[in-house]
Length: 383
Image (cartoon, rainbow, N blue to C red):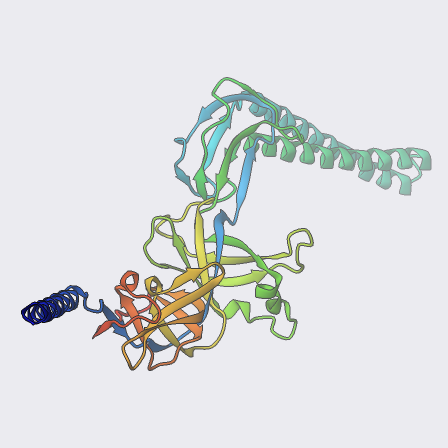
């Protein structure tokens, strides 16, 4: 009897101990369970924006001229510094003028002789005409005097042409800048013999214009083909275009999109477009690359969120939103163009969705979170 009672007490004591240990264990587990992660959420911003088309292209000069001599001779002078800006009409090179001055003097002398011969021939012809009326000269002599007069007139015309040609050759010894722009280095030094006036004439230097300047780019036929519509011949002239170079933080260069080529390149499927920019400060250089953008349609209301709030899953784009029970949901979205610091969302979100904009790495779809209200910083569009 005593043994049974002792055994019963021992078992009861053991149950109490086990329950106590289990209670302590549950209490400890409850204390160790982490709270839901804290994330920052915000509704998308709704703004009226224009959709932009963006293309990569490069600047090129409107005029580019290879400077060559029109006459042959020895180079006597170079009147510019390599790389300087020159104006149209500036004398760049001077070819030795002495042979051409001699040729001009000879042409002038020949011209004076032709004038004298013409005067003499005219007098002889008139004298023969007067004598013919009195029968003192034959018709044959009269015809001869007339022929001599006409020949002298032709000689005078030829001598005048020779004088003009000699003057032109002398003028061509001063090689002038055909356009205004930036000049390259001189390719020929003083003292060298220059070949001029032929297809293989010596290349002396090169000049490219800077102001205004072209920006050329290629785009898909779908993007630019509508500007080939003959019913809208001047539409391209009305489209402003903005450029950002590698040295710029915004699209600060404004130009005019004013040309679309007349056919699509069959090998690439692209169409050539061109814009013109003022370049009075000479900051844009031919050959410089840039990103061009222009508005492709009318302004429309759009939802905007930060680009960093968008995740990628292979070819899909998604965002994480917090529902009314503070659980995370994954939403596939259709993303659009980048509008300054925010990304346009074309589909998949509503204006009232709470999008996680901070703490995305801590959130998991289907798990609860602590959502705190945040704000999306919107930077006004700059060009």
